[in-house]
Image 1 (tube, one colour):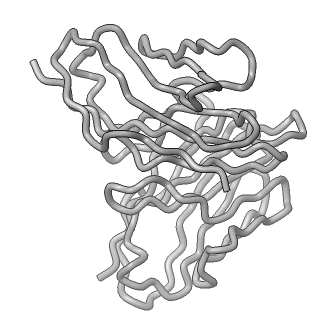
Image 2 (cartoon, rainbow over the protein chains, first blue to last red):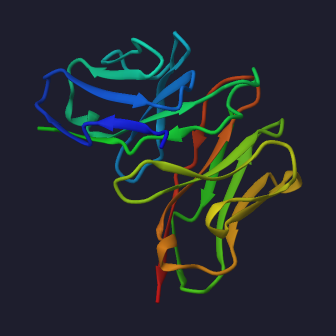
Length: 117
Length: 114
């Protein structure tokens, strides 16, 4: 089945130690998103790729970076994780065809729960 | 800025009872609206979406939502709750203007008791 895969599902890192989260998709979607969801809160968009074009949200900290080496893969890099970065990180994809944006369903992966010690 | 307000962070219903989860949006132009469900330690799954077609939208698992422009609402309903419906529900809006962005409400946790 076509899907969005996130690895690992659980990641533990130390304060200040760089960490990379991975997302892959078999849907051949042109848009990939990264959301941060803290406990009992709504997901918050960090950034997204529209094809190869990177779009950063204005309030996303510089500590968060992303790479998309090809259509199928997207990575979230946290350069120096702080305790406040502990959260669930959700990857999503969509196939935007309308040109309007946002009308096509976003498909979410199961998430990676990040713990910072 | 567009936003979404979900009334009630926790809703509890009996099995078999009506489920009503409230969502109001703020927008000068009717946006696209979505309801997602999240089970513990899982990603979000789309229940249904409104994209300016029919105002009554039917989704998966027996859920439906009605877009009411006059009330700026998009409430989610299900006639008869099942134990398996217990989860977190998020209403989301995609602002008009051609931008790929979902703005989520704070979520409503639905509990279903026997």
